[in-house]
Length: 369
Ligand SMILES: Cc1cc2nc3c(=O)[nH]c(=O)nc-3n(C[C@H](O)[C@H](O)[C@H](O)COP(=O)(O)O)c2cc1C
Image 1 (spheres, rainbow, N blue to C red):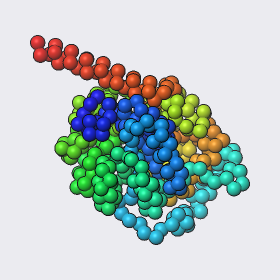
Image 2 (image 1 turned 60 degrees about the vertical axis):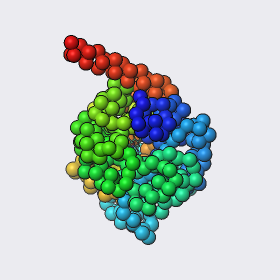
Image 3 (image 1 turned 90 degrees about the horizontal axis):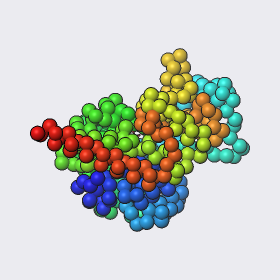
Image 4 (image 1 turned 180 degrees about the horizontal axis):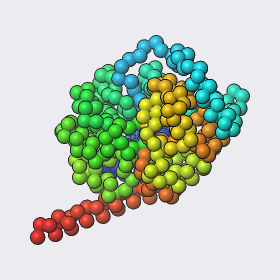
């Protein structure tokens, strides 16, 4: 699976893997793909520095990247406490009522909520970038919009390619105008924040919109045949997030959650604002149902919702409260039926890709005669 972009990055397969786990990112790169570590959960730059050191050590000199959630517009001087103060009491009461109804225990005294998505804050994301540019990252991706111009400039000065996720051709055009090097066209099926256009329609639209910029196909890819489809639609590689969640190297901290993912079918996810305030695909649970119920108070806009539910999500994960336990994941969860090593997943993807190419060649040969 070689394309111009994979050759530029010096990787064997044009398979890009987004993951929150350094060991998974390293294993993807070691297996000949390109591992990208998600930085959004790192509030402490020192912790990110330690994990990037570890990734580098495990990656055996193979290239890797970092994904940040950098706001395109600067929001100066706003602290987490200012944002917390904007959360209505009624919403806090709703969270409390749900936790009580399902008997979710409290965290131990002094135990900090381990799940605080504050990487979207300007000061946090900037701290992450200082650490990132001290490491030999080869690609910097941004989740929600184009990164600010000074960040694009800084990345280019370090010889780092800049990628950005796009859920529509319009988003993609904006990225191209902002000087982005690689567009990740992420379809409706994908895990995490996602738009409303399916990958099959989106990928060729984005390829056309930003040509000749390279595009990566994302959303709903879990086999080599699906990867081949993405490349057939004009992408220069594929970008996968969900599939790595059930690899042996992943550290979900919850055997119950892994079991839930392995048992889930492709219809068991929902695009809900319950986690962050923006539509994000995740496992459907009684938690997402409660937030999406018109009889409830509804979700708050980003970033309020994320801060509102942070502690509750930590408690649900820590105590593995079955009905409420969830995670961002895409519709491809239906194919995630066994725990495998990252190497085995990559081998399976490349074998499937070869099968698809053989099949299409055969069909093309037959139709030509
Ligand atoms: C658990 C999880 C967390 C994610 N978090 C982020 C994130 O922080 N930043 C980002 O750019 N994309 C994030 N994504 C989206 C992935 O980068 C990727 O585009 C998506 O998973 C591709 O679709 P797939 O899930 O069908 O493979 C996340 C996806 C998952 C499954």
